[in-house]
Amino acid sequence: MRFRVEENQLIPTQSHENSFPITQIPTIPQPPLNPAFTFNPDLLQQLTGKQLLLDDLPYSITEIQMHYENGYLTYRKGILKNKKQSICARCGNRDPQWFAAFPCARCGETCIYCRKCLMMGRISECTPLIGWNGPEPETTLPAQIMAWQGTLSEGQKTASNQVVEAIRQNQEHLIWAVCGAGKTEVLFAGIEAALAAKKRICIATPRTDVVLELTPRLKAAFPQIPIASLYGGSEDRHLFAPLTIATTHQLLRFYQAFDAIILDEVDAFPYTVEESLQHAVVQARKPTSAMIYLTATPNGKWQRECRTGKRAYTTIPARFHRKPLPVPSFVWCGNWSKQLQKGRLPQNVIRWIQTRIQADKQTLIFFPHIPLMEKALSILRPFHPAIEAVHAEDPDRKNKVQKMRNKELPMLLTTTILERGVTFPNIDVAVVGAEDAIFTESALVQIAGRAGRSKDYPTGTVTFFHYGKTEEMLKARRQIVTMNREGYKRGLLDDMGGAK
Ligand SMILES: [Zn+2]
Ligand SMILES: [Zn+2]
Image 1 (spheres, helix red, strand yellow):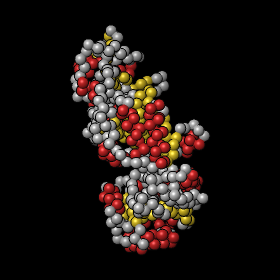
Image 2 (image 1 turned 45 degrees about the horizontal axis):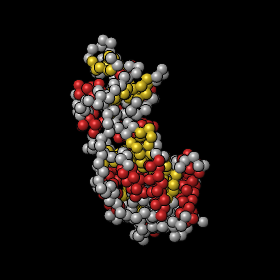
Image 3 (image 1 turned 30 degrees about the horizontal axis):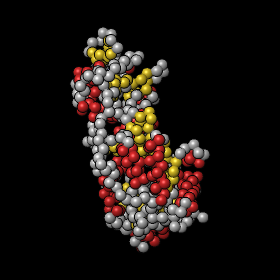
Image 4 (image 1 turned 60 degrees about the vertical axis):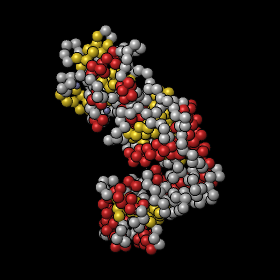
């Protein structure tokens, strides 16, 4: 598409005469809001707080342009340019390797586009990002906003109050909750406060699994509030809702939308490695807004900021059942990968496994790499025919996890794919090769956090088999011990466990 500038307005045109791709127009004029104009209420619903492409909207350019001319829509440049580089306005990409040029039929020039966010529709130099500039949708509040009536533990209550406060004051706050502390319930009062103040609130997470898991829980807690649940392929894409649950990917379509964002699992892949997702979260916030971060395992930098008072945070150091987190023990097992290549497992690993099979105790065993895990599987199958192994690309992954839940498997071998998000009530956990670089402090804390989660089985052993202790292993154990100690000190644990 090309635009010409006329009487301080952009006018879309086919002609090349005195017209340009939007990126080349220095400043985009914004016509003033015409209160006499009757706008299309569907556009209001679909565009509030968004930045969409023409292709995302089922309306003619004529209708879109009319709303722009009357001040109800904004056009923003999809690709920004400064002297040196191109910058994608949607995903923040400025790496030249992630831009490409193509002969563009829409503007009739060689057009540069962003490859980084291509899966959300192509943004090129002639692509306007369309947003809403009119009034906000009216929301009516039901008599009862929240139906949830559960109780919070002491630790949860403290955190819950902080969330409410941060949302009221538009502040940033980190909730550092140990694995299995029950962090979702900690959000409910804050969400209720936001909704009551007619604020638009979003729970964002890097993982689709989490969106799918949270949606029914929030619908049950807030049954009369419209909730948009957004992930790749979801159907709620065009729904305006006071409460949104979305993958961080989906936030690329939002622009200054939310008064409060709750970012769950800040430390999870791909959020930690994808700058575009961090960009998406930042620009989905209104300039004045609250930001709540939730995690069981903040990275080293954040932990330091917490310790030195640079970051506002609250810990939930204990689980609901008041038993300490299982503290991992370190067991040296020699050159396990060399042994595996020769078709053997270290004797102490074998013993650990045999004891548990005989005692009918379910186990989850982590391996750093798929091929070695497959080797281990073939060695272990003779011990019990139902032992299984899973990894990220395993098409049968969901089914195997379900079988493990149903207690049909005595043991599940896994890569780090199951380090978070799964709960099996009564298991012992081991890592074989805990010294591998893939097992970061945060991965190891998450892995250890798989044990002892249920109130019926609040304990479980966690063993890190290794061929040389690493700093990450030590940091992980220290973090767990510190949390137990704090939980005990605050009266949230019945006993101290390994936190001596
Ligand atoms: Zn992009
Ligand atoms: Zn073009």
